[in-house]
Amino acid sequence: MTGDRAQNGAGTPGLPPRTTTSRRLVLATAALAPLLAGTGTAWAHDDGCRRTTDPCHGRRGLIHPVNTRETDWQGVIDVLQHRGRMGGEQVYRMGFLRHDLRVKSYGHSLIPSLGVGSFISFVRYEDGRTMLMGDMAVTEDEMQHVIDVLDEHGLGQTAIHKHLLSHEPAVWWMHVHGLHHDELVLARGLRKALDVTGTPPATGLPESADVDLDTSSIDEALGTKGGTEGEIYKVTFARRETIVDHDRVLPRMTGATTAISFQPTGGGRAIVNGDFVITGEEMQHVIRALRQGGIDIVSIHSHMLFEEPRLFFLHFWGVDDGVRLARGLRAAVDCTNVSPAGSSE
Image (cartoon, rainbow, N blue to C red; front, top):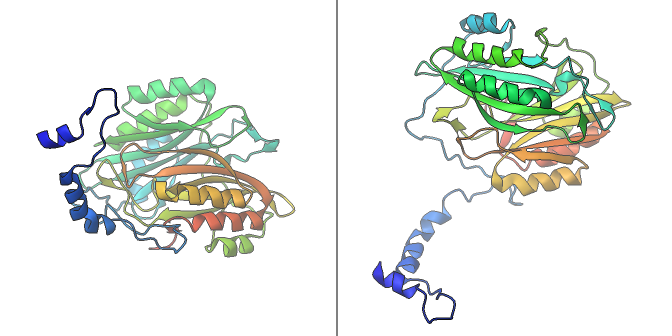
């Protein structure tokens, strides 16, 4: 150590420090080179667009989710006075749409099911604890009150950001996280937070309606079949890797999805809004693909604090022919390590 320090010390007065690389560092780097070359450097596409490594696969000490049924969540349903739905066998999902808000962006009136609402998932784990995870749509006037109430009830915030560029009224999306042995404690905290917003009583799932879009061509462009939720057409992809947060394995469709929503505007045209879940390595490829497809970048941020692998969420916006938008989105999807929501990949 002393020799290394002397070799990289101040050197001659008045001259910059010497940058001679120590012999020990050179030898260590040479010894590690074969290992470094084999860790996470394999790309699935020749264009360097997508990784296939899974850093959490096979890791020991992880806590796994358990299967549940809707009846297991009756207490949560009673507290929140709302019936959600199962997402697979491990996640119970609830949505609280902001029908009280009349949100406009660039002159377009947005349907609440485009994403103007609070969307929460409950997951039970093998150690008996339940995780609450999701985001809440709050106005700027409501935000600080919601933060205080969540904190008072042991629920944390993991991100605060916008899903839209120019819009009114000013709406922010606040990501929340909680973990407790009693899911009713989590549900009561969420109920209190919702009560300090203008969120109206939940009315259940929106009834599906015919959408003025060429959905079969959109499906073909995106390589998977979407579904109608109210007047919105939605397509979802999930990360292929094992996603871990707080040493807990997240079910495939929780916390790490690329969600694409189409709101018809007439004549086959649509608004597209949603977010991509991406790694740092995928970021610029996705941005470039979206911009080449005429789609705007809204924001880039994290949704979680302790996730592995590290993930970022990129929100987007576009208005054009629905099929043309779908083709641009497909180019970006192909730059990420995801598969359609219904797939077991």
